[in-house]
Length: 97
Ligand SMILES: [Zn+2]
Image 1 (cartoon, helix red, strand yellow):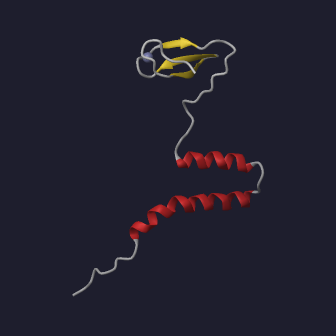
Image 2 (cartoon, rainbow, N blue to C red):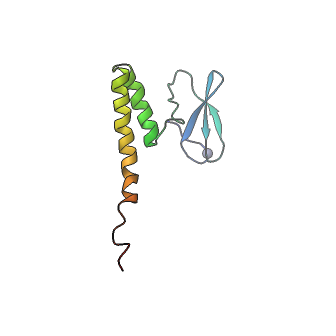
Image 3 (cartoon, rainbow, N blue to C red):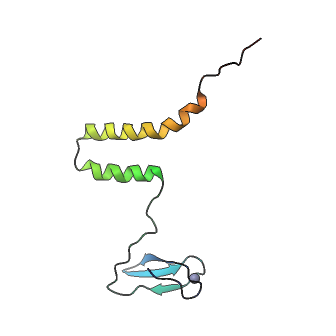
């Protein structure tokens, strides 16, 4: 990990042609990454639940059949939808007269 010499924020790697540039999100400082150092391009790693599921599906695709994969997707879709269904509920006690 490299830090910005100006503001000490973490420098983020980005690809520019065949080079890796380290840049500072805060002040815009840029420097070429040192050769031979394996900087991981972390900028685009997804963090949402949905993206996580895509990653899981990708790794699963190789091992399971199409059918199993669909079941797997359904399973995760169920988890996603589960949280919102409670909102509808049954409207109890609305019609007392
Ligand atoms: Zn900076």
